[in-house]
Image 1 (cartoon, rainbow, N blue to C red):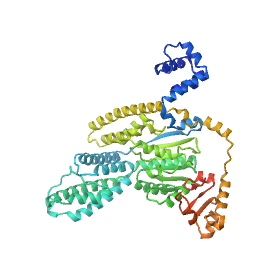
Image 2 (cartoon, rainbow, N blue to C red):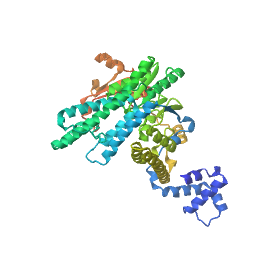
Image 3 (tube, rainbow, N blue to C red):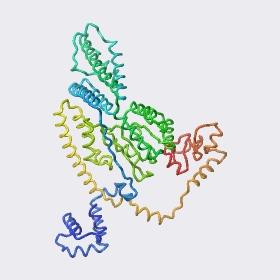
Image 4 (tube, one colour):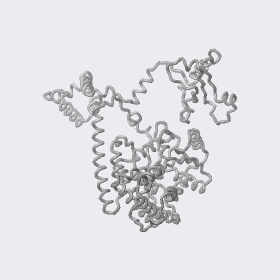
Length: 540
């Protein structure tokens, strides 16, 4: 790529760049090493000579004929690319909040490390990891999880508890913190084919576990503060004062946190329009939530779980708040990608990231931010190392003493630096395999459009073509309805746009085509509507 670029722009190179280009051409065998510098410079001014060199280079890079890579930075000049404004929100927890966080983290670390050495505890590591994420997401989400766990323990101990078995408690051994999807299979498996003594031992462990969870639950309930949610409310107030009609997406990983935030936000200010977007909603509910968010005349807030980071685009929104941060940087990139897209109406998007001062997660995420420009630019080249990052993240998080935590954190830094170096080397090798000159270039598009004389149908003409086709032989092949016609025919009261259309395909067309067609399609021929409401299919 460097050679292709330099040969194409040789007249613009300075003397140093020309010398290095000639040296590289000689080293790679594209020109005779015995040829003089003056003669080569003269030859490089001849277009046919340069063209032959470029063809030789392309011949050595056969993949460039089949693989074309388009990068946003190549497609759009800098003034048309969205600028990411990243702001860090440091939450200073109270002493009591931080002490309880450390106490619970160490408790979870004991279970996690115990599960690594016990192959029978399948799934426990995953559950403990989830609980740790809940802990830093919100107090409310962790409390709701504790409530579910305590109910599960109560349910199972009633089946297996033998009163004379409770002789001695062992608070150092806790092994049955299981998420809902594991509860039935795992706990039943623990008691299946066990002797009475083994069942009694497991039951005692359950009781120890229950006691610890109840202690944590009571301590959390007594905490009068929630420093993190208070900070969020302050931030929303500032945004509201600047622009009362702003659109804000708040991401969290957990539905419990989502519902908690909706309640406290609505309690604080009735001038906010708050909508929920998560996996438990059906398509219609999701579409309605997005539409209400888009069309709100007040401060519009969309509270979204991770599923909102996939499949939906929000180019009409420019502010994103990461209330909690997933450990996988690619998930963060997916979140940002919902706003930082082609068609984003603002030249700047604002990303607010919440960090809890004094937590292990903050130490690790800050390391990622510093080393891989997390949030500020695309991190696609680092995808192969994500698995390593997550594994080392857990080693730091579940260290049971400060000395081991510092040791694991330093190891994490070293590993991260080394893996980033390797990833960048691989990216450079990939650059050498593919010639970017065949990738999309804005200048090429403009010249292509200027010389293009092909006649294309407008969207209105396409609509008329479809409409007239489906009128043939008294709607023999099907029927195309506008939204108004369909409402009148069916007494439909839904809030459909006037530019929406519905197509019913009749049997003669369904049975006489080699394509697999549905009986019914809903969408629009209107480009502007399709851009504004991407949940509506676009007929083109």
